Length: 203
View 1: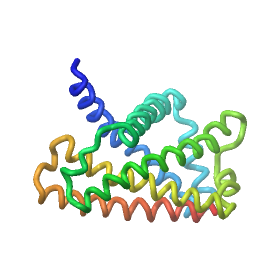
View 2 (view 1 turned 45 degrees about the vertical axis):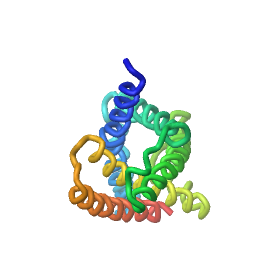
View 3 (view 1 turned 90 degrees about the vertical axis):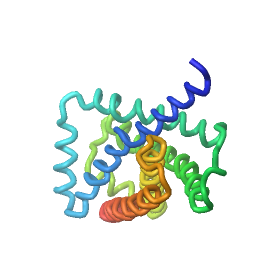
């Protein structure tokens, strides 16, 4: 297989995994965390439902960790080593292109830390629930880090949807790409409000 063909397929897979399943999981995770705005009992009931899912560890690896690992590794390659095609876009899109790379790195750091503080600690015997998140986010510095991480993740997902639509040939003209921009900005605003409200509820 030619190197250009292989890179084309890798890029297609990278954008696809960013939306399915990673993007869907991000939305689900934000919605689940938002239950904290209804109180500790509401959040803990959601956690209990998730933790009781059959074969949870296999589902996490198959639909979250392995796709996320590929998306992150190839994303880092694009950010630091890949050839960029920024001249194909206008001024606004050049900025979005740059922010996509920056938020990708921030999101990777945030997700790695979040997994360490929650899933790995749970594997070591800690109890996952409202109290765990409250203890983490009652620290103002950690609250600020989490809010930055949430906003970075949501931006990366929202702008990634725009890239997905372009790379998969769904939005091919200027008008459709402009409408996609409005759509993804709306997604960013809605998910940001949900994520930040959840973080503040834990704090």
